[in-house]
Length: 102
Image (cartoon, rainbow, N blue to C red; front, side, top):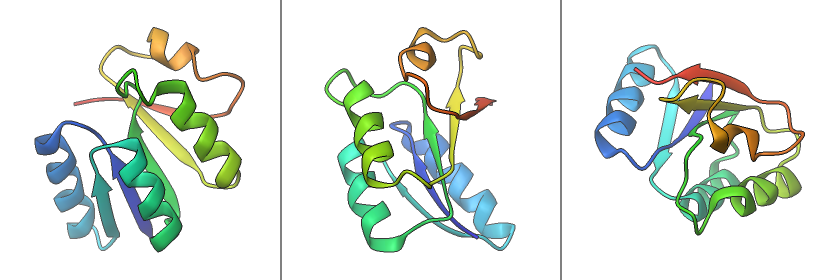
């Protein structure tokens, strides 16, 4: 499976990538929304795993762009604040899976 990880926390991003590679997945990662958009266009991942909280400059605009360009891309969101994270609520009527960050 090709997995793309988006998180601004470099340590968490690298640890997750290494773990998933050890589980025989192809993994790529990025630290910003625009970087990840380019990687999605290039590598066509099977799933995007992303931090819910992105910089204010990306935020909801980033998720609108992802859903507009890649409507069939499964997205798994991670949050340290649980499913009632205000950032999660701002994402609109899209269907996402949410994981608690370690």
